[in-house]
Amino acid sequence: MLLGLLQVILLYAYSYHIAKQPGNELGSSPLILLVYLAIPVTAIYYPLFFIGKAFSKFRLAVVLIAALMLTYATIA
Image 1 (cartoon, rainbow, N blue to C red):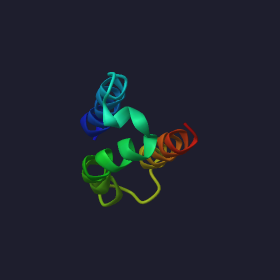
Image 2 (cartoon, rainbow, N blue to C red):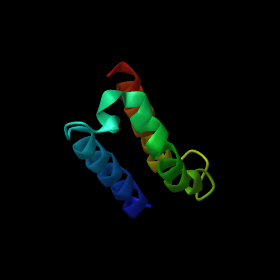
Image 3 (cartoon, rainbow, N blue to C red):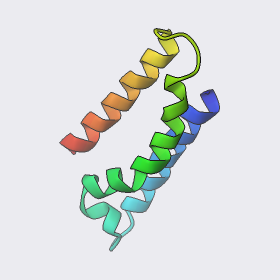
């Protein structure tokens, strides 16, 4: 599970780096970035909801981080 979380963080970091390149369509809107990342991020987060205890601290932390990322993307 930690590898999945690391993969999500690296995916966001790489996408942010790509979005900063001049003339790239990812840099035009954070909404486009969310659309391009929706499927891989969902594929990584989806198993977290079906493995382990229902109210584990790790699961709640992952959900909180995902909510913070979504909030940041909509505000930016």
